[in-house]
Structure formats: structure tokens, C-alpha cells
Image 1 (cartoon, rainbow, N blue to C red):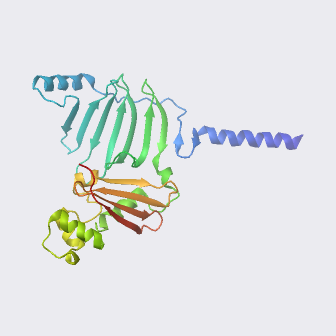
Image 2 (image 1 turned 120 degrees about the vertical axis):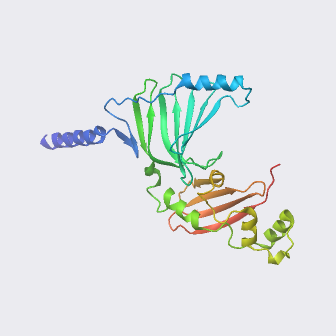
Image 3 (image 1 turned 180 degrees about the vertical axis):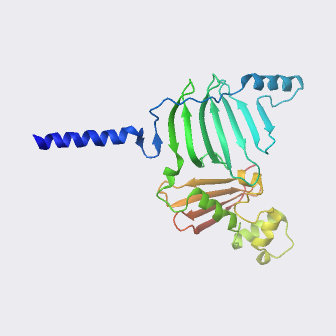
Length: 264
């Protein structure tokens, strides 16, 4: 009987230890105490700007861009369901923006820090702690975004450093030399066309250039399902795109693949 009581006590203690922090899955926390946000979307200011744009005959009424004194660019927009979004872009060469979503009543719905480069199908690479709120502005969930990458050595910040140093091309195949000669109408013989020549034409020398905001916005990251590699896509439209595979533990680039342009 004493043994059974001891087991029950141990189970109760274990349950309390698990629940007191509010953590029920890796990296996700549900606050036990009541925490409220004071962050609300300023619909009065936003609607005033929309009306001013309407009077001026501007076409893009619902996307507003404001440059703050500290250099941050604040992009505000409203969806058809009346919810709102604010994106805070820091000055170049920063690579991480703050994304805020707001409920229709103006209260903050979510706040997260994420990598600037995004496209349909790529990962939303997040940093720090993402926070989520209910309709009344109460914090209901926090997510430690680092938990997603705890099993790999090359975390997103490590990947940035690798991509900032790695050249766009290391060598060109015979097919690529022929293709680039035709695309750029180059005077050199096909076998003389080098990575350096193409990089100079594109004005792109590394996979990721933080000093060029558009370059960053067109460099997309995805961690493979098995977490063995980072899949990096660099869009160089209208000249195609380049795909790279980066080993998520060694940091070595194990694949470079140029894809010719097929878009109109």
C-alpha cells in the first residue's frame, strides 16, 4: 500500500512540474498568469490616410508606408475582413523584420520576428519568441522559435554568415556557358565565359548580400523535412534562379543548380 501511495505522489509531482510552466509541447508556452497587451492598431489614423490618398487619386489606397526617424520602414495594410497587418523593416543591412497581425477590433493578434526573404512555398524563418493574443488582447501563447532548429548545427544565423561569404557561382557547366553567352550576347568565346563575368553582369557576387534589400527579399530559405539540409533559392529574374543545398550540420554547399528563366 505504501508503494502505491509513493507512485501516486511521484506522478502528482511530475504532473505539477510539467504544468507549472505552462509548457505542453517543445518550445510552446501557455501563460498561467493574465498578461495583457496595450498594442492596438490605429484605425483612425489609418482610415484618415486612406481618405487622403483617395482625394489625391492614388491607386494603392490600402497599403501605407511610413519611414521613421530611426530609419525603420513601417508598412501598414488592411485585409478585406478588416484585420490589419504591420511590418517593421529595419534599415539595411538588417535581415530580420517584425511582423504584427491585428484583430478586427484593433487588438494585437500576433507578433513575430522573421527573415525578410519570403516566397510561396519557402519557410517563414522566425527568431526569438513569437507571441499570440486573443480578441481581448490577452497573451494566450508564446513560441520559442529556436526550438525548431535545436537538432541542427547550422542555425538560421549561421546560415546567413555562410551565404554572405559563398560566391554566386563557383564554376559554369558547358551548357550554362552557352546559355549565358546567348542571354547576355557576350563577345567572349563560350569556354571563356567565367563565373566572375556573369557575377559582374548581374552585379551579384555572393548568395546573400545584406547591403542590397531587394537581393535579400529574393533569397529564400527552407529547411528540408528530414532537417538534413537547407534549401536556398536565389531568384535572379529575368535571368532565372539558382538553387543551393547547404548541409545543415557541416555548412558545406553540396549542390549548386542554375535554372533558366521560363517566366514571361
